Image 1: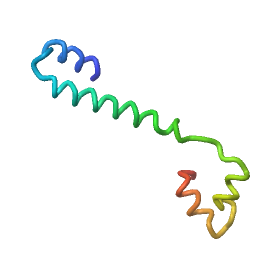
Image 2: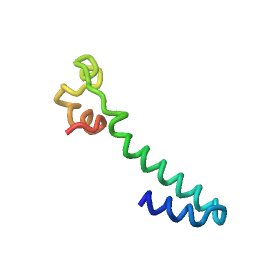
Image 3: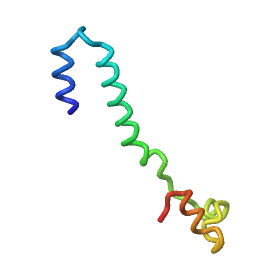
Length: 70
């Protein structure tokens, strides 16, 4: 898709810069969304698990839900 956009963009050079800018924004948004899981995936130390109450029976399910853990 990116390559087709580049070809089309070259053919339309100067004709529709607003559309080119929108296409660039969508491409950047896709790249950012694709990288997001890696950016926020960090190991939890034992101290962090305790602070987040992930090991306590009453709060475990909710804490894991918030942390994205299964």
